[in-house]
Each structure stands twice: as structure tokens, then as C-alpha cells.
Image (tube, rainbow, N blue to C red; front, side, top):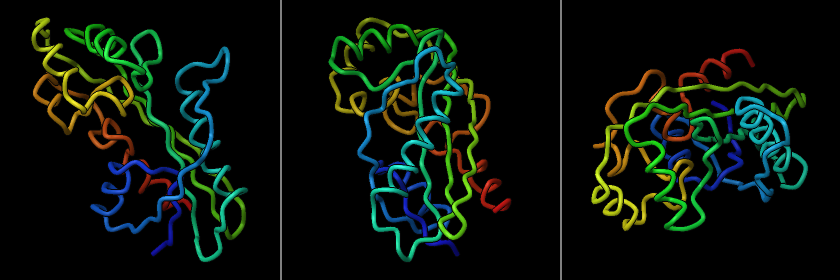
Amino acid sequence: MYKIALASKSPRRIQLLNDYGMQATPLPADIVEKHPINCDYISTVMHLALKKAMYVYTHENITGYDLIIGSDTIVYNDEILEKPSSKDDAYKMIKSLAGHEHIVATGIAIIDINNGKKYVSHVDTLVYVNDLTENEINEYINTEEPYDKAGAYAIQGIFGKHIEKYEGSYTNVMGLPMEKLQEMLKSI
């Protein structure tokens, strides 16, 4: 069993790791999550996941840990949707997703502390959102849920009732694709 430093304070990521029998200590990366210029969404999430893991590797006391895991999730529908900065921003995001499909992409970076090797990958999930009325959008953005999540929603939260279907990893949409993480851990 690896002793894991998670470069995140996300309660969803911590819970997912715990649910899969992995104990991780949150050591949030203090970085500006700025997307690289002229990069596609895949390169973006992989870059930010590695940047978070590298921050912990170089700035934190990692004595006693075996691995650092960094992760970054975005919602993409012809543009990258980050966390909303305001109620108006959340409204625009949910309005743009309603009645359409979009991609949720998560980059994962693992640093093996024992040898310094880095492993980076990503996962895409296609998510279909039902049409929403103005009232449903306003009702949703008046909750606390949209404001700390990429794309302004959580599939496992109250917005889940508006998801028609998804193709791919459910845990990816939550913020950490556990199937891919387990696959990566086997290659270490």
C-alpha cells in the first residue's frame, strides 16, 4: 500500500481515494491554475496536473510518502469552462451546457518519490445534459453547489438529475478517474 500525498484539497478526490481503499494526505498545491496559451484541453489538464504534483514535490515535506498525485479537471464544450467566478458566470455555463453534450477531461500526474519518475495521463468522459428551463437554471445556481466545480456542476450532487447520460468514467466527472489511476499505479 502506497503512502500518497494528494496535491489537492478537494473533498471529492479525497473521498474517491478512500472509497477505493487508498489513504491520501491532502497537501494542496499553491499554484495559479493558468491554462497554457495555445494548448488544447488535453494538454491543459495534463500540464496542470503535473504542475500541481511538482509543486508538492518541490515545496512540501514529502518524507515518508511514496507517491504524489496531482489532478486537474475541466469541462470543455468548444471552450474550457473552469470554476465559475460569479452567479452570472455559473448561469452562462449551465445555460451553455443545457441540452448539449460536453467533455469532462481530467489530467492525472503521479510522481514516484523513490526514483523521481513522472507518469502523466488523462481521461475524457462525454456527458449529456437535459434541456433546462430558465427556472431550473436559476434554481440550481441559487444553491452552493456550482461555485467550486469546473463547469459549475457536480454529477454526484443535485445537478445529477439533469444529466441524461454519460459515456466513460463517472469518477472522472467527479474529479479523479479511479480506473485510470489504478491502471497507472500498476505500471509503477
